[in-house]
Length: 184
Image 1 (cartoon, one colour):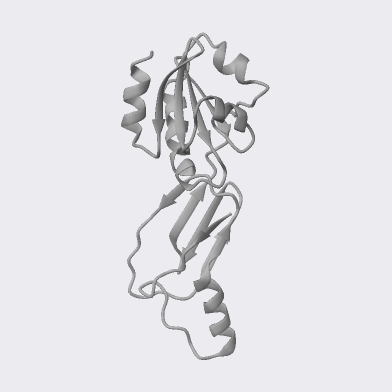
Image 2: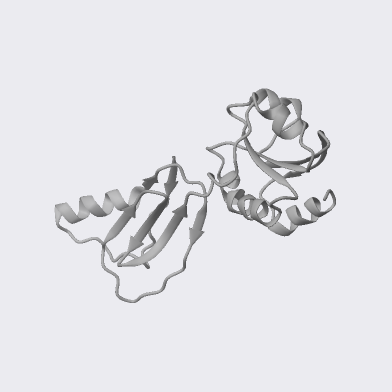
């Protein structure tokens, strides 16, 4: 579960002195909890007249709005790339005839969630040439240990069942593309 910092004073006016408004302002200013964030998308805003309305919309998208303007938005992007587990590792990764990209991640890792949309784009861009999977290191720690995963996100490219290249951290899409192109 992620915590979103409160809106700045430029977005919300000073609290009023009524007890109900003061309590509501305090609750909104502390933090808002979003259900399992997997991708982040921000939009900037500027407005001189802003009222105190904050809205959370859940589902496949979560949105924080202030005065009708979107301040913070998430989208569920983790479902596009299939998961690989200890039971499917050998058949999906090691025995694959095409190159395989594996994203080692964990649900609590913010940078991992930041690169999920990038990995989704790569899976679509290289469909038919490259297989992409996600491995949750919390669920499959033995595989992560076997490949020396000490930091997440780590993306490893496999070809003919062998580890060819590892990319550690939240890096730009071009870094992934350059590495992928070497093994196609």
